[in-house]
Image 1 (cartoon, rainbow, N blue to C red):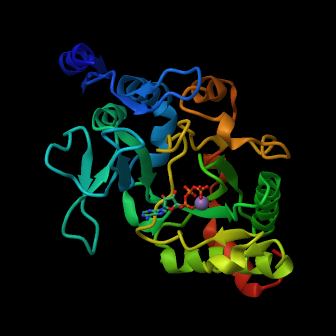
Image 2 (image 1 turned 60 degrees about the vertical axis):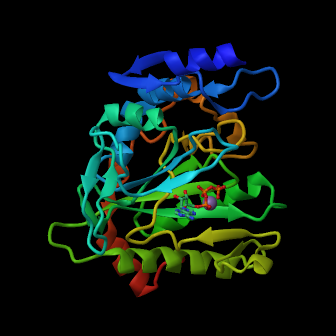
Image 3 (image 1 turned 90 degrees about the horizontal axis):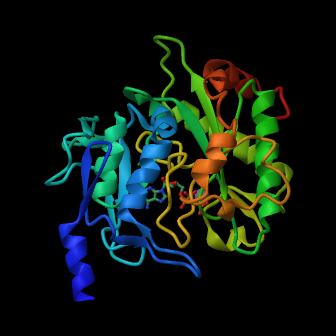
Length: 315
Ligand code: ATP
Ligand code: MN
């Protein structure tokens, strides 16, 4: 053991120009028949999928979850720079907080984040470079433990249909956990005064209607006891400082699951979110067309607000 530690302390690797110390450090322990996932493997994962990720994190404050001793060790949830934060990360001031927030604007910053054992990235959902302006709504579908995953798949598809009736498009991703995220990117005209209160009210109204139509399937209250057998439609995360896990971010959970962007063809019966792991995702992503239409999915939010205020659609 002593000699192994010595190798860990003296060895280092370089990924995207960033020195990775302790590259053999296990961050996700070995599951049966597997090697543990090391810090170096994490850095290389970010290098492989980083270009894809950047579009969805760049220009937005980003919280991180670090686990220097791996997923079974202590975790640090971090919004702000700390001593030793790499210069490859951007620091941004936002109203209401004296301390600047972390922001990931360049690919190499992902290697710097791997170096400090960043297992998860959680950006804001603002418009890039405009922290006060909402840029996408995220519906967080949270099933109670006894709910089959196929029901979550149905909920995501239903939500997509309701959004379409309001003139909005939707994209779907696994969370790397138990639910799905339905993401609706949108545009605001220059000078539009819409901010999070309006975007959140819209998200709420859509979820209220969906739960009202199928109260046996969906709830919009946080209360745990009302969630039994149901899916919690969490619209509450749509707020100025709220975050959602980034697409392609790994999760600090057993098996290194990843929040995987999906095509709607994949959001169907039998979908198994645990298939998407830090090890499997690079190949899956290379073959996938998921989210290639992200920018085409950005529709004017103003129109949807008008339609829902008119109350005329069945959305
Ligand atoms: P799951 O499918 O297992 O629910 P999830 O990522 O949706 O995975 P949630 O706990 O439902 O996990 O949280 C939704 C999002 O809200 C997260 O992706 C995260 O960005 C944010 N979030 C949740 N809890 C916190 C917290 N305590 N502090 C900051 N952000 C949080
Ligand atoms: Mn969730």
